[in-house]
Each structure stands twice: as structure tokens, then as C-alpha cells.
Image (tube, rainbow over all chains, first blue to last red; front, side, top):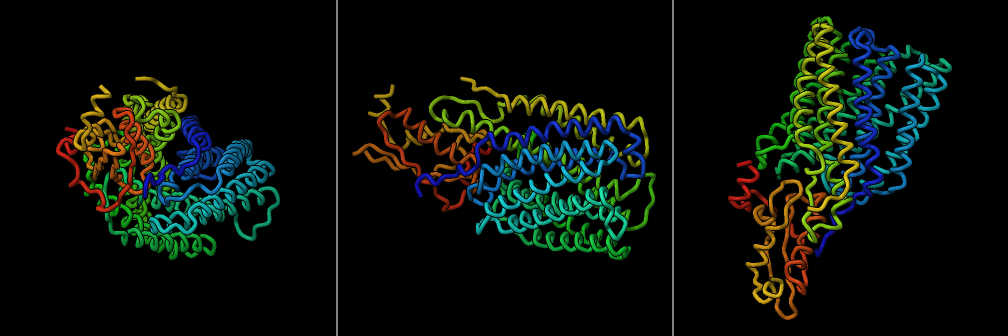
Length: 422
Length: 108
């Protein structure tokens, strides 16, 4: 097994654009939120501004970085080459123009033609993405739990995209035999839990132990989490379509149990970690997990019928996206992008001369302040939603914005890094 | 210095030289991380086989670390043929990390 190659990743230039789009979208999303407090604090979520903000975040910020990171990480997790590098580039342009067009269409009175055209572009991007992922994973025997979660997540992504396109067409030519709001809820539910959460669990089940140096883990809790979350998702979808409230409560209950099993897995990894000292990239990754506890508590309150000023089911979605998913992504950016750029610039010189390390490609002090402003920002932001306090809202979103600007500065510093000689 | 290196070449010397190779993610050298399982020197023809492991299979930095080992030894010992063999048995564990490696990983 001489020189078994580990370099199976696609070229840096085909994945870096996904990261840049993501970092820019995060800042734009936060700016939009700060300028539209009424749309966010109101209980009516399906207004044009909220739909615009949501799609900037879920497509531009989250889906973009997931696409880019997956093309980089699938070879690592499954020891396979990416099936087609050309496809990754086509997917990027479809995602970019689809997202921009869709968000403009939402913002300008939910224009039916725009939503349908750009929704179709996004559906093509999704089909190509799923094809590339499926062919890449192939018959790999590595990391079976991760494979299960990732393959399932892309099926939910397809269902999310199809539901989205049906909604867009319905804006143009109303044809749905039931209220479109119900399909909108299903679309959101499939996207957030089915696509994001399943994918994150699959990828993190390999990467978090790898970064924290933990081996020989019991995979059963993850299988339990898989069955519970999948059942929750299916029952949740059915309950929305045929309006059976009991099913919805069972769905939330199963979802809570699924999250508990996943959190327990992460807790075990954290306790067993051989790498005791964590850098800020990893700290930021790990701080995302306690926000899942807030999601669980919010869900339990919702099941128990508690009433707050703020709609609890919407609170749960916002905490999931901004608390858990965004925080995890912002942390993992520092565990992927600097390495991609470093390999591109410095690998030809490794061993031949002294080179910088990936961590030298960004400003660590900026990362530290980004971490503090993001964490304090999201705590105050969530508190402002629950307490319906506009002043707290501005402080929270202001801190999130400072974090997003600092983040973008670091991302650009990494992306435009030029070779330095020591 | 280089000709002296070749004249005084030894397995222990090569092992110590590998401390120049740093894991780009953990910021600790591969010797203190316990990733070097063996150094087998052959003098005629002059070549060395390095038995190396990684902290996890499919480590994205694996290729860069292997290249670093090869290039560093070829730079320090001109004329030396370097073969790096990636091995997974026994699998790497924290028991293989030196005291210095532990200190670096724990931030002391």
C-alpha cells in the first residue's frame, strides 16, 4: 500500500465559489433581517420579506456551503473520487442564478413567472447535485451510518425542491386542491429537517470524531436517531396534508427523541475527545449543539400547549437555522476553506521549503471576535423574539451583523491569499 | 552539512528529522503525534522506508503529510530514496503520542 492516495478532492477552484456565495449570503440575510424587524417579529411568517430572507439563508447561505463542502468532504468520508468535477461548476451557476432570481421574485410581490423559472433552475441544480453525490458515494463500504443519513438527506432535498416548484407553479396557475399554505409548511419541514438536519448528522458523525480524535464509537445511537427523525418527518408531512393534530404531536415527540439521541452521540464524542484544546473554529462548531437543547425545549413547550408572545413553532425553526445550522457552518468554514486554499497554494512546496499552515491564512483575532459577537448576538436575538423586545432585537441582530462582517473579511482574506515565503 | 548528513545517516537520525513534518490540522509534528511506526534504512542502495499512519483514514491532509515526509527527507539527505508506506495496523491511538505531543494537544 505504498503512497495510498488521499487526494481525491476536486480542484479548489470548483468548490471555493460555493463558500464565497455562502459567506456573502449570510451577511445579506442578516442585513435584510435588521431592516425588517416587523416582518420577523410578527406572527405572520408567510410574507414576501420573510420568504425572501428565508431563501437567502437556506439557499444562498446553507445549501451553497453544503454543496461546496460535500464535494470536498465526500471523497474524505467515503474514500471515493468526485464523480464529475464539471457538474460541480454547472451546479454552482444554476444555484447562484436560481437563488438570486428566486429571492428577487419573492421580494417583488411573489412574481409567479419568476418563481417558476428560477425554481426550475434550482430543481435542475438539485437533480445534478443528487446525481453527482449518488455516483460519488456509489458502493463505498466506508461509514455506513453517514452514508445512510447523506443519501436520505438528498432524497428529502429532491422532495423539498419539487414541493417548492409546485408552490411556484401554483402562484402562476392555481391548481392545488388544498390550501397552498399546507404545502408550504411541508416544503419548509422537509427542507429544514429532511435536508439540512439529516445531512448535518451524517457529515458530523464522521467529521466531529475526526477533528476531536475519537475512534471506535458506538453507532447505534445514530441509527436510533435516524429511525426517530425519519418517522417524525414522515408523520409530520402526513399530519400537515390530512390535518390530524395528534399525528403532528407524535411527530414532534419523535423528533425530540431523535435529537436527544444525536445530542447524546455528540456528547459522548466530546467527553472522549483526545484533543483537549480546541481552536475557535472547533469551539464555534461545538457551541452549535447546545442550541439544539433550546429547539428540544421549544418543541416540548409546543407539544404541552404553552403560549408565548412568539409563535413557538416558528421560534423552533429560527433557532434551528440561526442557532444550530448557521453556528455549525460558521465554525466548520474554518475547518474546510483554509485547507482547500492551503492545499491549492502550498501543496507544491510542502517539504521543499517552510510554508505557512492553514490557520495562518486568516486572522485569528478576527475569528475570536466573530465567535463572541455571533454567540452573544444569537442569544440576544432569540431572547428578543420570545420577549418581543425591539431594543433587544436591534442589539442581537447588530451583534450578528458584526459577526457576519468579520466572517466575510476572514473568508475574503483566505480566498485571496497569495503565497508567502517564510 | 548535507554530505555530513549522508555520512552519518541512521534510522534514529531520520526519525528525529521527521520532527520537521507538522500535521497541518493539529499543529504538532508527526513524531510526537506517534504517526511514524517505523524507519527502515537500507544502505546499498541508499533508501529508507517510512511506515506511517494517519489519525484517521481518508484524512484530507494525508497526501500533504506523505509529500512532506518524502520532500523533507530528500532535502535533508540528498541522494536518499524515500518510500512512504501508509499502514493502518495497529490503528493509531493516543497511547502513541509522546509527552511533548500530549502537551501540545492539551495546550500546555
